[in-house]
Length: 138
Ligand SMILES: CC(C)(COP(=O)(O)OP(=O)(O)OC[C@H]1O[C@@H](n2cnc3c(N)ncnc32)[C@H](O)[C@@H]1OP(=O)(O)O)[C@@H](O)C(=O)NCCC(=O)NCCS
Image (tube, rainbow, N blue to C red; front, side, top):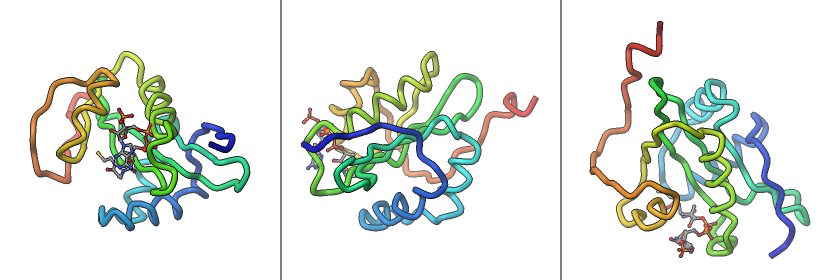
């Protein structure tokens, strides 16, 4: 594996983030990526492959108030999967939400992966919009 640097996601990375998510048919529009990053500038992390200077993995979480965050949009470039890069990025996201209760917006079948990161309990839902708790507006 070539050398990897983990850093925060920046606005200039969002085009690539969206491209990777489009390749998975996630159907997430650019304005959603922009809003997620704007409102959670410390919550989105990525892995840069130093030899190519390309971002090869992304993950982030959104603060929904009351010490809870929703983890979402975890993705690694297909040829770089299975090398431990995604786990490094996910770990960084988890560290940046230390003390938060994490909620995962994940695909069916990914339970073992998130269980390894301390999220062993599951519920299943099919919503794309999550209401922000009222208390966080105060
Ligand atoms: C899930 C994903 C982000 C993991 O990234 P990664 O860089 O491969 O992560 P790691 O190499 O650190 O592996 C972490 C786990 O990912 C899963 N994984 C690894 N390679 C994979 C592959 N080629 N395809 C699918 N999942 C894979 C495994 O569960 C692995 O756990 P293990 O080491 O116990 O087997 C990546 O496989 C991916 O982009 N998949 C498609 C998008 C997706 O499903 N995202 C998650 C939505 S819930």
